[in-house]
Image (cartoon, rainbow, N blue to C red; front, side, top):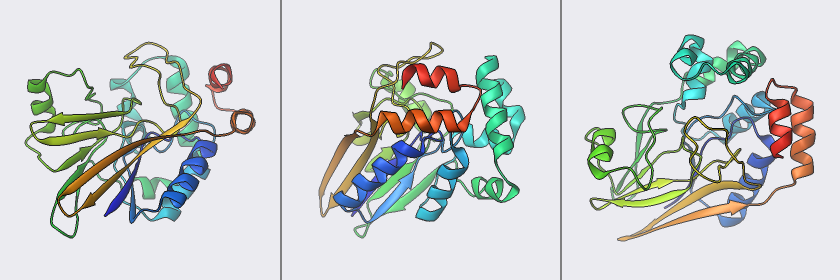
Length: 241
């Protein structure tokens, strides 16, 4: 079984197209989306449609949740340009789009043919805003995992690729399709790298392999996309593109 993990697309259609083309060449049995499909990026509606067309299981990210319940933004940030961008994104979405986002799950499990379990989430199984990093103390990871255990556990949110062994389990972060960060930023402005990120998990009998992948894409096309989108963070994104 080969599963491609994509996360944190954030409305970046150009990056998602590059990743999906790479996934097609690599060959997988399934794609799983770990959340934050929309918001911040230039073309949320197009990206959401692309994800819907994939007919893949989707985890609810914090930015996806903000589309369903705008009041949740208050617990996340009060930075005006980010708040305005989230509101702008929600205004682009139709009732049908919002209905699709409401099908996303906060945490989900998948089993392969040998009954090996994989657990997928956004930040952590208990909270989509939590950050699991390579440096997070083991006791804190235990608390975040909230009793969940599996051969492979995968989440996004940090925009940082990671593969970590934790008490026999593999914790994977595929990084960000739309806006991968050079380093974990917390509340600081990020430095965005010029590629898209995702991961492939391969399970064959008793073997497990995790491949963290980086895919280049056309930066000129991204700039055109940002200019077309006209979101409140357009100027900030153009500086990074």
